[in-house]
Figure (cartoon, rainbow over the protein chains, first blue to last red):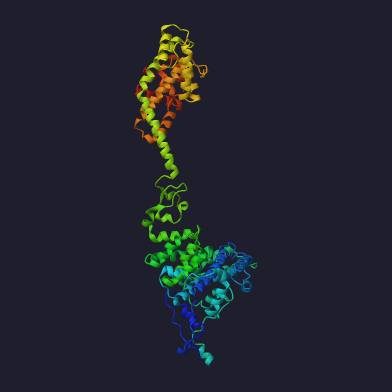
Length: 168
Length: 430
């Protein structure tokens, strides 16, 4: 009988805003392993990633035909742009496009859900980072930590998913 | 049995297919049970009602019967709660959320030194990118107690500012400093010509071009200063010259006036050579050095002399008009004018110059030249010689002007000034 699952620590780590993340538990303490928080550059990569997706979703939501006509073409355009900008891998884009509903109304609902989830993800990943990384409150010093590189976007995202959100 | 017992415990959210494999957005699919957006959750039921209305209105081809949708929404209380949502969409909600977060951020940030340091640094940076702002979001998250939702909302409001990121940052900075502080003026960048100027503190960050009318020039550019010095010098010279001329007015004008009257007596061609009038004209002109001693054609020489004088002191257009007016015939021009007409024109111009000097006595020296140009444009030089005209010429000249017209008013004003300074011999003008 299990009282917790491998996903449970993630839930703790991503508690509602302002609440500190629980300290990582070790195997010797008898509890499951805490998911490590993403680093500064990984968190920036996540925000970059989610912002790019949000931008494309916003365009779709602003389209007056949304919910009234078939938006598949516009959705393909948006996903293609994300691939071209090296935000998402082509294989993932193809998989995502296969999930686009056929009916206009369902397409709208699908896009809206993605948008809301995307927004939640931005907050959750920031919360997760904050929960374990302690700031120095020294602006100049903190500025020197800005080591993100958009050129390494795919690698940063991949590394973060592997080390921080494995199984997600 | 074990399976049935474990089923009693809360189960974790099952991973669902997110946007992409290995993508952070998938992360929240597994964690969607952690709802940080309580407002969204509260409106879920209403959204479902709206969704249901749309679903019931779907035509076989997938398009929506909006009339039917509206009818269903109208009759469903849950849907009515989100009636606006049904038309304006989720983006409006997000926009409102960002506004709320921004307002809340303002309150928090005013008390937070780190936020102010960040904002001061970024606002003064010329080319802030969205990548910088992503870094800032993470840094702010780590160093302040500001909730992530608020940070992301503020970063969104900066990034999506219609005038660009820079504008968004300065706008946020101004909000935090408050209206009173933002209105205070500070030294701004100089104008394109190099003149110093002040800008409101709140406008300083936007740049002078964006600040537009808010800038206030507080000095002259180097070029303007040089021009002012040169212009002031020229203006001062003109002022001094006018006053010097005014002092010598009587000595210049008295013999001229006499010559004007004598020329009227001798006639246009000087038929009266050898008469007292002609001898007097000759003596005066010789005494003033206008003509050479022993001249046999004093009137002709005077004509040449006054022609040159008139040409020097008036523009071509006005000289023709003046000699014609004094002659009483519109077809007379400078070449055909008699010595008498030319002498009267010269005398009128001398009187006008005197009026200008007397009227401009209180004008600052550095402004005199500009003022004098304006004064001359508003004067009718013929009015200053109106007393020299024959009654017939006066009537003709007055008849040529429509009462109330600009030229009539200019004449009247000029005559008034001439009277005021007692420049006319006979007070019969007008």
